[in-house]
Length: 186
Image 1 (cartoon, rainbow, N blue to C red):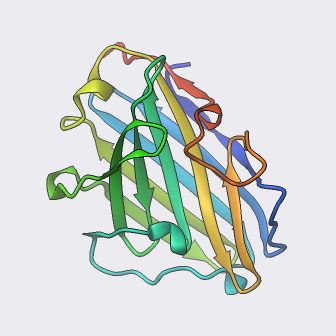
Image 2 (cartoon, rainbow, N blue to C red):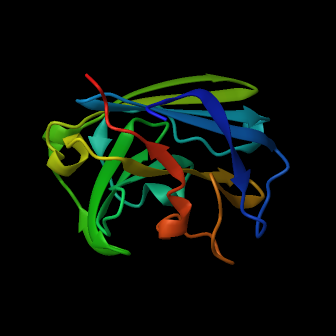
């Protein structure tokens, strides 16, 4: 499939489920030059810790609070990228040569566009990542994608993803990159 226009349900890791969260959905749209990612969190947001809006900035350890994550690699390759988006507008991009072998890219020119909307029962986060600076993701290659969310609530954390291949939550595991995005024809 070239794009995932429909919303896909993320599933909670069995180790921790927060009752205040009813569902998390995600989708990914790819073109030759950009990747559009959307997340929808449904539940009682009064019980979810949502970082307040702030000026967009690079930040690290966004996973210590509510954030949404996208993992992308070229099909068949070990290296991958991790994109983190916080409801506050903070973001981070990491490059890895293999499983957890890498670190943050502190390049402000890679800043994604992040839009957040919230009601008492729904949080929406949409991110646009321009791929000009990520050459291997612009190539005419199939991409393997993992979509996930870390949700902090008053009762603890829950971890949501397309799938959970490990006994413990691990979004970096290659088995979690289950969404296939074909090269753009444009």
